[in-house]
Structure formats: C-alpha cells, structure tokens
Length: 282
Image (cartoon, rainbow, N blue to C red; front, side, top):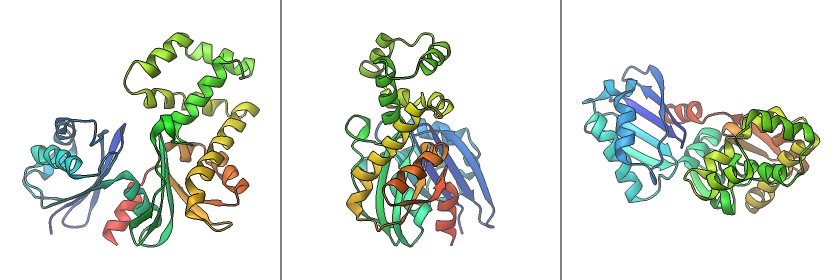
C-alpha cells in the first residue's frame, strides 16, 4: 500500500497528514495555497521544503482539500504543483475546503457543517457528500460571521465614532499608523483586503468583553445563521458543527447566537485535519 497524504489547504497555511504504509501518521504545516489565485510553483516549493519531500518517487495517494479546489483547471494546478515536487502520484483527489469540513465534522452521517475563518461557508451534508450549499459570496457580498466581515464592521463603527473611548484609545496605541486613509488604501487599492480586515480579530477578541463588541459578534453570528443556515430548514435545537479559527476563538459568542436562533453548536474544531484523518482511515 502506498503512503496516503491528506491536505487541508487554506489561504494562510496548509496542514498535512502523512500516513505511512505501516499506518503511522506524521503531520506537517506549510504556507497556504489557493488553487484559483496561486501558481503551482508555490505549492511545489512548499512541498519540496517540507517533510513531504521524503515521499518523492513513492507515488503517494493524495486527498487534497482546499480553497478554490473546484473544476478541471484547479485540479490541474494542484496536480502540477504536487508532481513537480513529488514525481508521479498514485492517485489525486482534490476537493473544496467545504467538503473537507463536512467530512471532518459529520463523517458519513447527515448534518450541517460550517467554516468560520477569514471567510465563512456552510453546507448540508450526507454520506460524506454535500447535498445543499448556501453560497458564501465572499467578504463584500457575504461571508457573514467570518473574520473579514467582522473586521469590516468593526472598522466602520470605530471610524464613525461608535466604539467606546477606551477601545478607540487602545486601537490607536496598538495601530498608531492606522488612520482612515490607510484603511481605505489597504481595502480598496491593494490585494488581500479580506485578510487585512480579518487581521484585526485578535484586537477584537481582547476587547470582546465590551457591550459594543459583544453585540457586534453575536449579531454577526446570528446573521450567519439566518442568511446561511436557515435555508437548510434545521430542526429546533439541532446541533451545528464548526471548524475555523473564528469559530474556535469566539465559541462562547457563537453558542449564544445559535441558542438565540433555536439551534445549538455541536463540534467546534480549530482545524478539520484530525477529522479528515479519521474519515479516510476508518
């Protein structure tokens, strides 16, 4: 049996599991990769400089879950990046990060799985496949509950004078060079606006005890539920499962918002990798 590689690729980092022929599992982390925006050479360089390089010439079987992994062009980018680093692959299956989250959180059962990270996404899944998906639409038109959407709303309230003086003063101390013109330039004129907006989440977390930020967070998560989850017609009290940094770091606010909408948070995992290992080795 050839080695099995499982990848969970996000825009910031990629988590890897390497399952040897003998069944031992090793883990690695590399730079992120988006199959829509990034060149195959970026993926190849990450793999070649990581412990995965030991698999070169051994034709591993790869399950690759990642942002932008939809369609033939994305699959070709992933394949070229991996084969340039590892040589011929035994098999390659590339799927969306949403399917990865669904399989990690719900296994082969039926349930609702969500991603709350820089962006947001959700699906109704059954038998390890997505059966319904509310489109996330990105941080401008959607991504409710994600770090970019929360960061966008926070900055808007801050610069319009709707944050407490203590929060505004702390922001000025921590980000002394961040003025209105700087924010407008970063958001409207430079790439990576979604990551920039989400970069303020640690500051928001450190001040989440204030009434204003508590209200912002719970309202944003309730918006996520109403706009993205209610179309699946969840039953009252149904458990909804989550993965992603925002879901993990703001779990109390998330649970409060779900309860207000008649639902409950089930599993909340920082990363889907462990669940994917279980899914593919069970």
